[in-house]
Length: 375
Ligand code: GDD
Ligand code: MN
Image (cartoon, rainbow, N blue to C red; front, side, top):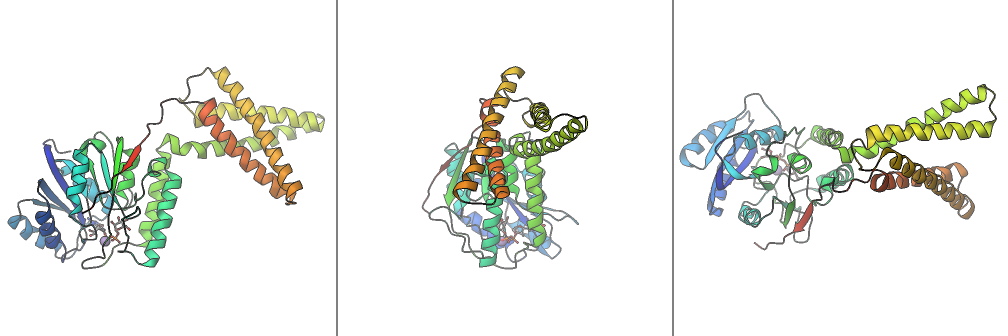
């Protein structure tokens, strides 16, 4: 990290890959629009003559710096490199191709000055427009956003988290190790950064000025891998998956003990009762040690009792729902049971999360304030 941080200075990080027709244009555009101290950092992986153009550009425009990475590729890592060498106390990221209107930088900076930690211009709030994408990309983009919100809690309040256009106080990533895979560096900042207030500003995503998009199938795949990594690094997001795995393992424990007991000559109902009890106990211990490890301020006895109460209600819900769908809607009984089980799993997870392992104050809530700016 750069040691010399300049206050009230904006570092605009622009990743470039073969943007020979755009780099001069965007530098001029930013120069015309900004009335604050700023620098532009191009982090360039080009294999065309973009570096030569950048070399000329730094001589004519003192605001511009660039770093060329020989034989390196990757938008996310390029942007992280830009963060490392940025000298401003505020950092913006934008594309080189003028799809992100530079005049917005001024309003984003004002929002930062007024106390927001992160500002995300959005195509998907009233006043915004994603006109820069064709229908196919619109569908892929919407799906990606939806999956992101389902996967990570921190993305839920943000309407345009897959964007490549945003600004934040450098403190947000202080002491944080960023390990992006692929393109979506904003989700990395949102998932790992330290912040409390996020502003959104509607904007119109423009068609590309020149050259062509470098988006590919590979990047969609990278996005999914990136989400998986962020889930597994986030205790609150991975919890449900741990819970589901523990629950599944409980089915096998239950069947195994049931099998042994019946082989030993136990009566079926008694064997069923004992194996269910043992499975419940083992599930509780696994959930206590893994799923909700280090969460909750009650004694283990209280947690155990709450877990059992929750599970008993869960069984009631399972059977109630089964009954309802089977008798009232004449659903197949296996399907009815499956719906019942799903409801019980959802119930058990939620109640255990908020009651059994009640974690007061553990989750730092992110408040998203939407600021609408006309420009
Ligand atoms: N250094 C570097 N290395 N820069 C790269 C690389 C790379 O491997 N690949 C792409 N870039 C640069 C491009 O030169 C451009 O400045 C910026 O990253 C975005 O690339 P585009 O090819 O213009 O992407 P896009 O317009 O299809 O996608 C943009 O919009 C999406 C929203 O739908 C990006 O901003 C995406 O991040 C965003 O999700
Ligand atoms: Mn683009």
